[in-house]
Length: 186
Image: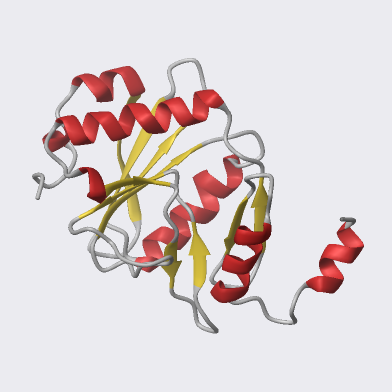
């Protein structure tokens, strides 16, 4: 489908229901996201290194006692906005309780992790830092795709902004205990 045909097929205002329909209709595994302001982002499926990093973090968290149904890859989250909700799909999420539904509310979301891919650097390291902080997500981690897979661990302050608590290579993070960086497993 051409970009022109795609644009003609869009409704005037895209909702999470519309976004869900686009995701379900896509045969190529693209990731569709909607900002709280209504901007659609379409990215290609993750590569194997990207998926491996997400799996490493998932196994690290479940190995430390987090229930498997609370450590989830590529689950949509509802991001509240002034004119309607947006929807993001972090690479990995950690929940205080098992989430329900396609776009669960953020009530029990403890951590969102984004792994930088080609073309997503500014989205992951700027746009989502601000958006996830406004949404009140307590912790946000960004894994860079440099030689060390540097992880920036953000923590939400009382002022409602993220501070970069620390930066470390992914290998160092995986050698530490999640309890050093998160509340205890529920």
